[in-house]
Amino acid sequence: MDVNDLDADPLRQLGAWLDAARAAGQPMPEAMTIASATSDGVPSARLVVLRGLHRGLVFFTDGESDKGAELTANPRAAAVLHWLAPAHRQVRVAGPVERASEDEADQYWSTRGHDARLTAAASRQSRVVASRSVLETQVRELGQRYPGGAQVPRPLRWGGFRVLPDRAEFWQEAPDGLHDRIRYRRAGAGGWIRERLSP
Image (tube, rainbow, N blue to C red; front, top):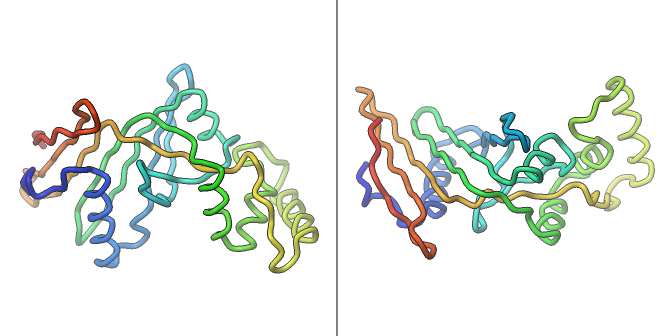
């Protein structure tokens, strides 16, 4: 992989690698690890689903969850996407985080299935709960208020976050360990510098 083989823009390049992973039948190619940290620097990471590449990497969650609270208090994150055979590729992105717009959150909410909307509305993500039956009761009661195809309103706490890259790295595995690593880093007014890193 040569530096010049990659698009000048890392989001377009990530989109191309995602398309290739989908075409190759990679299971769940949009699975993405998000690492965040509390205001005093305690890190945590979890898997989310990448839902768009609109000015950054967009995902949706409960804004009052652990990750939502961390991203609000310390609005920077790192993301990793990794594809096994046949791709043998990895992309790392890091940068500041912003909230997705209410319109984006509404638009994505409307694509979720009825049961998924009930669960997201009833559950207070990351909060301690007495038992699974408590959760099931909350979902069932909400389902009685919004049966069948009724539109479940999006809770105000539920929305999206966008990781705005200020650096990105594209990694391609090589059998002999001489892996390709191409890093993008910001260069002034919206441009990017691409450079090779040692494996």
